[in-house]
Length: 324
Ligand code: SF4
Image 1: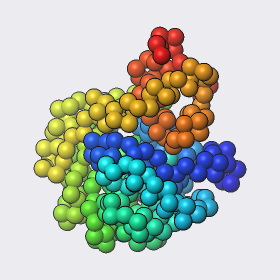
Image 2 (image 1 turned 180 degrees about the vertical axis):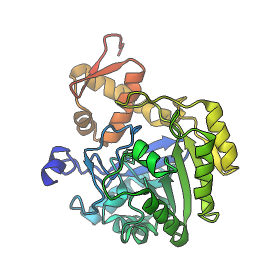
Image 3 (image 1 turned 135 degrees about the vertical axis):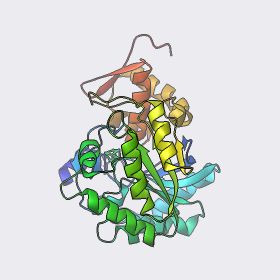
């Protein structure tokens, strides 16, 4: 594991604070990435970061951290971006795998009232201590793509030890113990979880959470990295699921690109200028621009979709048609 962490650049690049990034759901949020790229209990078929490198449920420290310096950096970012609405734990994998997450949250709470958001895939929620560790957050957004064990295996491709029933148990425990807001996000995939039957199965699960869910976001992937046979669901199917889930459900129109537009506008030119000088990996671009690798991957995928760059042997190259 140590060697992999070094190779993946987490320790060389301690820039765990990134953004602020703009999203329709959270406005401007300052990202805190406390997990090496890409460590997660899942390997979701739609993951925009690509294949999971270390699929695990193991919780640990992952990197040494100077919390005084961390607080200084967060403060500096907050002072120079007065429009930050959330400080969000997300990024290169599952943030709750970092055993120090509770300390990170407390340190942030000491210096600001900006709400803290934790994005989790829920696989860890039934693990010892996880809910206590995140109970100091203000909002927890939980991904719930699979309403059954079969679909969990098909969509999220979990690490050994992750079971559907335990996932739901963890979610129930969260809704009992956590006093802040809980939002759910469901990634809807064509012919996989987009039927009315799945809608009713989601509804049954949500009903057991006793009204603790404040919002349910029905989302679609912008693209499907390296996965054949996946495609966008029919909008009528998504609307049907929304109808089944009721007024808390909201369709997130990611396919139109509105979700990423805000942060990509400023970044795409910088990435293109860098690639004009030399083909580079996402990690190299991130190190050159001082940005988190998963933000770079999102921008590069956006540029690939627009036909402006292409990838070859893990390196991004600029296409001739670009006029910089
Ligand atoms: S939980 Fe998130 S980071 Fe992990 S594989 Fe799924 S989409 Fe990717």
